[in-house]
Each structure stands twice: as structure tokens, then as C-alpha cells.
Image (tube, rainbow, N blue to C red; front, side, top):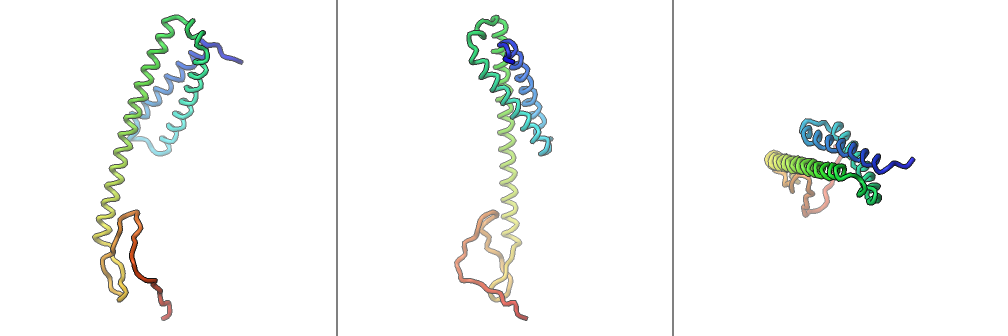
Length: 155
């Protein structure tokens, strides 16, 4: 059954309000969400965004019918679109701030691991004594020149 333009507009309003509500909840609850809860948010956001996009595309193809709607209804849609853009922008800013914070935390952890490893990590030399390890840094390979080593397993 083909939806009328008015039904599409009503559906778009509903989806837009739902999506805005979800964005606001995500922004306000971001720090307290578990990873499973965040995955649920992403799933819902993806589904609503897809539904929103489909409705917008359908309505754009009905320009003549949209222009025939009352000025009051069109103004309501424009205001709702502006509110949605603001909510999306706030959500994006919150997510970018959280990402930047997470990256700084990870970098601090990596630096701490590197510093601690350089202080405490030891290795055996060819003469079977211990010495400080020459670490290239956490997560990086170490290029050492030298020959092959073999282990004598005979007792």
C-alpha cells in the first residue's frame, strides 16, 4: 500500500523525534554506558537513521504535493529539521570529545607501559647474565643486528 504524502510527513516527524531523542540520550549517557548498551544505541541509531533517510528521499520525490501543503505544516517541518540538525551536531561534538578523551587515555597508558618496561624489563646476554632490555617501545618491533641464536637442550 502506497503511503500518502501526509502519511509520509507524519512518519518522518515521528522518526525524527525518535532519532533526536536517541541522540540526546546517547550524548547524556555516553560515559555511563556499557559496551553492550552502546552497541544497542548504535544499532537503534543506524536503523532510525536509515528509516529517516528513506522517508526524506520519498518525500523529495513528491515536491509538488509538499508545496501544496499548508504553510503552517511546511514551517513545522523546517523547524523540526533545524532542531534535528542541532541535535545531530551536539551528538557529533559529544562523540568527538569522547573519542579524543579515549585516545589521550590510551596514549597515557602506552607511555606508562613503555616507561615501566624500560625501567624493569631485563634480558639474558650471551654470557648468561642479565641486563636491561633494549625495548623499541610498546607495540613496535625491535630491529637488532646480530646472528642467529640456538638453545642447547641437552643436560
